[in-house]
Every structure is written in structure tokens, then in C-alpha cells.
Length: 240
Image 1 (cartoon, rainbow, N blue to C red):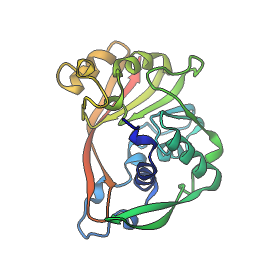
Image 2 (cartoon, rainbow, N blue to C red):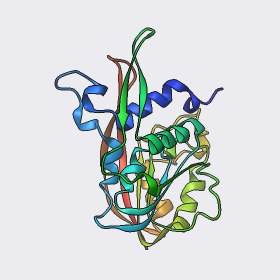
Image 3 (spheres, rainbow, N blue to C red):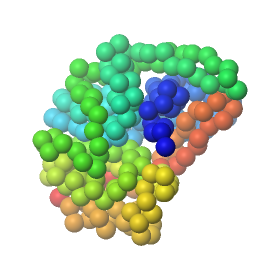
Image 4 (cartoon, rainbow, N blue to C red):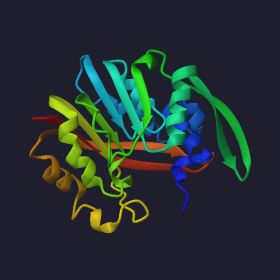
């Protein structure tokens, strides 16, 4: 089966999801505006203050990496999709790009999306990589973000086992997941044995202190009249 994360359509959907203005995403009064700007909102869960290094795992097309660049001298942004990584690099180089939107049927239009004006693109390094087999020389980070990644991995326990070595003692980890465990991404024998939150506590508790957990909605536009409205579980941890 072809990797959907390498398709042009999904790349454009994610560019709009990450960078689109509210009016570019939907035009319905009373729409689910609380679910907009998800990549920005989750970065805001990190504590205030400047840090040396930050890591965005599963960075997709890069909005959270740009948000992290405001307070980190260096941001490493990694995604498995070559298409997503190249889109992030385009945004880094040009600060904007044209996105094709599907309205209905085969009817398309296009809009331009832009990098946040107060980001520091030069601080970011985008690279393709596998979150289950990250390069050994990544080093340690003050902040690590893994957004909506766990339930898209073939064996998420491989990433969880690597996380203690990626986060500096005293550093922070923010994980989000919609807990949509699907056989097409993760064989069921690698799913959590029960509740995802309890599984995370069991897997990470010996290395991290759980600081907070709450729900974060997000919205992805598919067509002018069809959207994915999803609620992710967000957990924030401190390396002990």
C-alpha cells in the first residue's frame, strides 16, 4: 500500500492545517475555532524561558518547529515523510508557499500560507528520519515534542525507550496522541494493553515526572464542507 504521507494531497492538507489562517480553513460561523492552531498551542505547553536545544519528532510540515525556534537556539525537526520534510524546507527557505485546496469533486483553488513572522527559520534543521530508529548522534535536548506520532508507529515502544536518552535531566517532553490505534499503522500486539494514558505512565514513569495531562482538539480541512475534528491527549513530562 502506498504511503499516504507522501501524497501531494495530504501534504497540502497538512500545510493548511499547520499554517492556514482561520478563514482559509473554514468559513462557517460558529465553527470549531478552538481546534485551530494546534501546532502552536501544543508548543505553548512548554515552560517559559529560552533553551539551547529542542527536538520536534514527527514534525510533519514544520509549524511546531518554527514555534519552538522562538525560544530555542537550535531546533532539530524530524519526520519520516520525505514530502513533509521537503515542504518544511520550502517554508524555511521562502517563508511561504502556495497550497492547493480541494473544495468538492475535482474543484480546486489555492491559497498562500506563511511562516509565523516572529519565528527564526535559520535555527531549524529539517531531516528525514524514523522515530523508531533515530540516529545515534542526536544528543540530548532541553525540550522534546512528539505530536500525534505514537499511534502511527509500527512499534511505539521503541520510541518510548529512546526518549529518556533524548531529554536532558530537568528537560521537558510534550507528547500528544489521538489514541487512534489502527492495524494499518500499528499491529495490534503493539497497542497499549489498556488505556493509553496509563500505558504512558507505566512506560515513562521511571524516567519522567508527569506534570500535566489534558485534551487538545485539532481540525484538518479535507474539503470546503468536510473536516477532521479530533481530540488529542496531551501529556507533559519532566526528565528526572
